[in-house]
Image 1 (cartoon, one colour):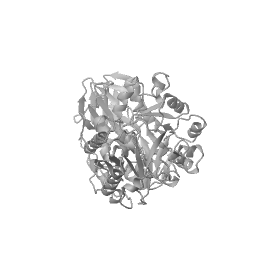
Image 2 (tube, rainbow, N blue to C red):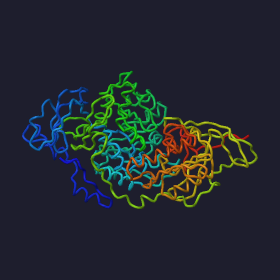
Image 3 (cartoon, rainbow, N blue to C red):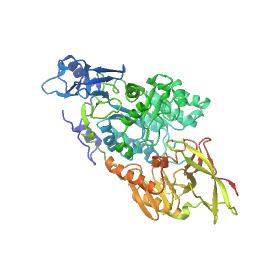
Image 4 (cartoon, one colour):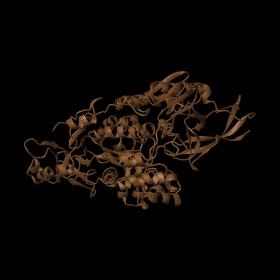
Length: 618
């Protein structure tokens, strides 16, 4: 059996690639072979022996059990696979190591890695991730259904399993932001017919569900009528009637919990609690006590990442990082593994297809010498070795991204420092203004109130408060919305701009100097999107993200190196906040409390309404 996975080169169509390289066979097409191998009538492709099999169905370690693989699936899992070995069978001696199922990420956004599906897969395969459930709602906001289809198509041809959830909310909050494209019930119904669609992406418009929005309920109905899973997103601390109304609306899971009470409330309503550890979201430790201390049934808890940028993937890991963290938080290693394998597969109706080392399932597994530290020594996906010793051993195929997907930043005009001025009412010396307060390692923000000086008729924030602007970039209107933010710690004359601006993905510019803000914004328009940091008229760092202004199709290590340079540049400007870029990119996410910015103005997410920047004048 070869360890190479043929590449779909740029310019080669998906249909041609599939004709040349057959995907994993279905269980039905492989059943006769699997039965024959298990019975000893036919040889296996691969046999692994001399190890310990972690059985996530029974939560036990089976010493000395052996595994036989045929046609990319497990054929035999038992005490002795010698009857499955033929002259051409590859035999892998494990030397006492553990076999654990390949890890599954139950909720994540590929675009947050700044990478295409192919490059994201290439980055996470050495960390033992063999299945991902992805919601491409970032690109949906920029390119609509066509963008989702491009992500879906590239995901389908990877050497691991990447399932796509059809985005539910573009815009995430109608009336509070403007997206490049909108998603509706007809789009959802169409996507449910695509082969790689596993369900509906996170239903972020939770007020819409709570208040009986016909569009939101129609999207949920289209998903459930197709027999697929509805993803949840209830980003509110209120666990009263609104939460119960949301649960009645159909979401089957939720990843927005931040404390033990959130986790308990969700599972009591029949939802799966998805606990995330991303680049900036640290929500496992505060919720896993529902299992480790309260003793709730762990089958209803799932581990996920939600958002991981390329630096985290390359330097720290992916789902292996989440599992290790859960164990460090007091979770039994076998329970933590269940939360990242069989629990996830069962939730999406795929228990018979993946998530465990059991007959008939996809042959996805990890060889490791330690269940707590989880070193990833070998990764097998669909029966093939895809990584060994921390290095990928296969090629992840690309599709050819069209030119219009690479030309998506339209400002309409060149911006100047005057576009970032915040005018004060006539005759005042200072104002009390609302300020977006960044909370380290948390998705929610605070609504702060700060006194801001007025000079020559303009607000001039000082100290920890700096300016934030939302620059429209989809239709070239030239519109700029200005507000204030606190928490980054920036000093000197600087600015940082990004076309990754969840979820509508306009352009977010944060800075202490309006000239630098204009330079940063115009730079991103020039290159077609990305992230840039400026100080004193000089560009300190640049991460090019030419695809939809969200992703690069360069290798993950290359993108991560540029992202590291971005972090260093932010630190050079005085920022000490952990994973500050992720915080920057979510300042326009108008479905997570409490204060955000959009192309329509400042948004009070606790009330889901636009609000004024200036509260009082002095």
